[in-house]
Image (tube, rainbow, N blue to C red):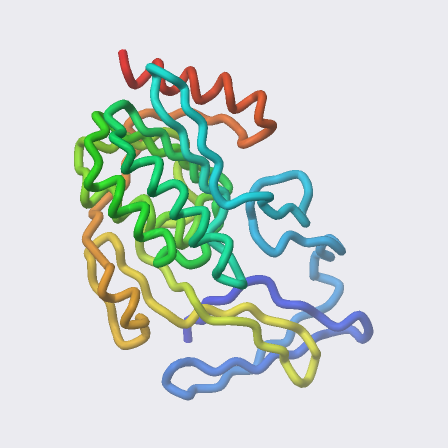
Amino acid sequence: MAVRFGPFGFLSYGKATEYRVQDENGQIANLKLANELTVPGSILYPRNEHGKADPAWEPKTFVEIQDWQELGLSIVLPSFFDPNESALPKAISAAVERVCAGLTKTLLIDVRGNTGGDFCLAMPLIDAISQSASSQVVVIVDKFTFSAAIVFVAILKHRLGKRLKLVGEEMGDGLTFYAEGGLLELTASGAVVRYSSAFHDWKNGTSDETTPPEIARQIVPAEALSLDLEWIAWPTAVDANVAFYQQVLKRVSD
């Protein structure tokens, strides 16, 4: 029986921790792990693998826009996770307004460290970029680009084709993955397990019965998201990004 799961918690007492798991066919299996073979995690383990030094980091704003004059325009999208679903739509609207204001130069979008959220809230920006007269769109990604942020890139690539240049490093996941789901507390041990319940296939553009309808309607075959330019740079301080964005915009305009 194949089981897909993330890190499990374990009892702080006793010699072993027991788990009972059930697959999609109802088959039940018991797992018993020796406590002395476990690796203690950090007390402040990051909920999102965003790559920041501070595990409790949260974005101060959902959109950062900077005009680089003749070089182009940059839009930073640090996260699509907005529990209240109010701040993100407003930020996306501001970005849409800027893109629709006759943008003809290169547009740079930074989704490094964006671990996902609700990509549907970002669809108005995808529509605006797709319809803009921008000569070129550059998207910067890294190994902390996950889930809905990958979907954002996949849809843009499908729509823009060669107009989009992908810069950075290989993203944190592929185009076929499981998402959605939630947290489940195991009654026997008290351990909390994160599970995923919905299938995404953005490589072939297919879905199944687990895929929510609102997502299935948006799924497109991105086929592959190969880097046009490999460039590793950590999403650090604003001052560091200033030089980085200028370098990337100059490089893609050559």
